[in-house]
Length: 486
Ligand SMILES: Cc1cc2nc3c(=O)[nH]c(=O)nc-3n(C[C@H](O)[C@H](O)[C@H](O)COP(=O)(O)OP(=O)(O)OC[C@H]3O[C@@H](n4cnc5c(N)ncnc54)[C@H](O)[C@@H]3O)c2cc1C
Image (cartoon, rainbow, N blue to C red):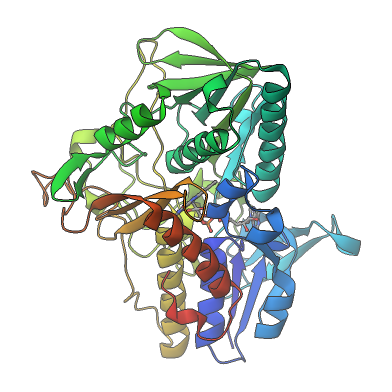
């Protein structure tokens, strides 16, 4: 009998736990440890942030689903990793701390045969001075409660504009020089713009995009060349076209380093220090690792064997210049090289390097996006990790037959560009591969144009809404959930 412990119940952890439970006989134990009692479909937080969905529309409690399916659950957070056990516990374990109920604050050694670290990112607001959701007129949509707060803030601004007939400024984008997840901010700015039109105040508001990207449409993926109808289009041209069409201004190459009440201070690639004023902002924070520590059986600190910010996996972490980066640097099995029974899918693994070209300001500050790892690859990598563990348990040895690198995997992304049954809009994009392969696809920006395309229109909104319901259905593990792909 084996015990598999899954840390985190986000897209990665939940997908892994669901597949493990479905495919493994019941005498093997699957246990999820996660501090948030709810599963949230993060992509729909955008709609919570404009008030068109409620938090309850995007989350559901995990415990009843896990109880029904025979998955163990502890509402706790991982504190430290002990992959060799210690003097009093000879099995590997994770030290966890309960965060709720009678046991809150109590720590426990949770032993495992296999460990999946799917703890995603830490939302590192503290890396930007004054950036804290709900303060200094700045908000976040990274979680459903942040998004609800953003919706309240946006609503208050609209009411103020209507009452006083005054003008206002909205700033949306990235809140740190090395932030990622530009796609989420892009969706939010387009949704906010559409809401202001709907509410009749669009002409009173100046909307500005602020980002650490060098060009529009970089999205932390070095931009892309897309098939668009019968022609090809650069993502930078596509985003510029959309922003111009909607009267959205932009500031690029900006590393926001400090927030004050209604003011974002940033450094640009020219090395200038500037300030942008606003009445409402939504800035994505830096994503970092959780700062976990690891110890060997003698309690010696071995954190560097497991973590490099995020968790170390089978990537090539050799430092090299951008020109020498290859898709082979990217991991395929998400297995930790020092402890083969530990895996880290989704955002929890340490990427070998960025995807976008690194750039420094004239003052030497790094200003460029960190690599995004969106929902689809998070789900796919979690499933392949689960499949490798299932094989290892059933066959008695680790074959690692299931592989998938961001350099040979595609991603589909439907960016909401406005909510509404008939007036909604979505930008549907598929990219293959996620990490550009400049050797294989020399003349098309490192991507296969047959599998990299974009489209804009109402159909995109309907597709995004369908995905919302389909993925929540799947996450609730309703009948035949596994037929819905990651
Ligand atoms: C606003 C927004 C919109 C997005 N929209 C899209 C989209 O449209 N399409 C798309 O593909 N992607 C989108 N993404 C990205 C997508 O949400 C992520 O790729 C995905 O959530 C990553 O999954 P994950 O499981 O690695 O991490 P997460 O989903 O962040 O899950 C991490 C889990 O770990 C838990 N955890 C944290 N600390 C601990 C600890 N110490 N111990 C145990 N558990 C812990 C958390 O509670 C959580 O359950 C969006 C992201 C944001 C923020």
